[in-house]
Image 1 (cartoon, protein in one colour):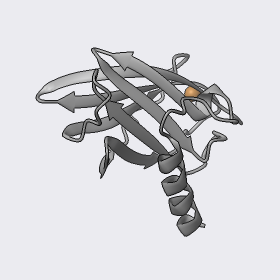
Image 2 (cartoon, rainbow, N blue to C red):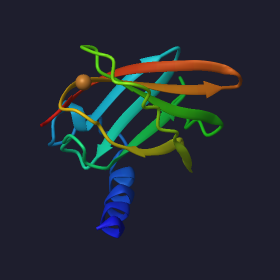
Image 3 (cartoon, rainbow, N blue to C red):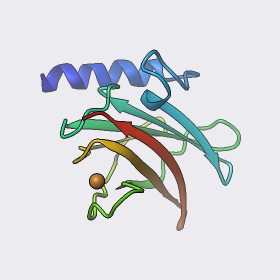
Image 4 (cartoon, rainbow, N blue to C red):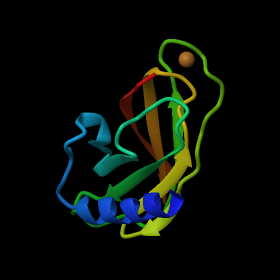
Length: 134
Ligand SMILES: [Cu+2]
């Protein structure tokens, strides 16, 4: 299963070019541009279900469309409705502007996923809203 997910991740990474939304709807692939940096967030599996281990793929590109590879990236997972404790998966650089983090949502409902990218000493962040199924 894990091997399959890794393979799937690779395929999604390759398919990500120019694709901001896929068949799974807005939450399987979202893009935001903040401070001239474009944050593309993809979840795997694309169907986001509570307490299911998943991978987030973040791809960073600069204003010229070039991948940003020198960032320190982590996610901040919060529910706007209630305090849920700290849940900040660290992302690992995969090359070509892509970073991968693993973790899970501990409750169904609406989550705010803030992607932090520290580039040359400055923190840039983009907030994504994700609906997690029970
Ligand atoms: Cu909650």
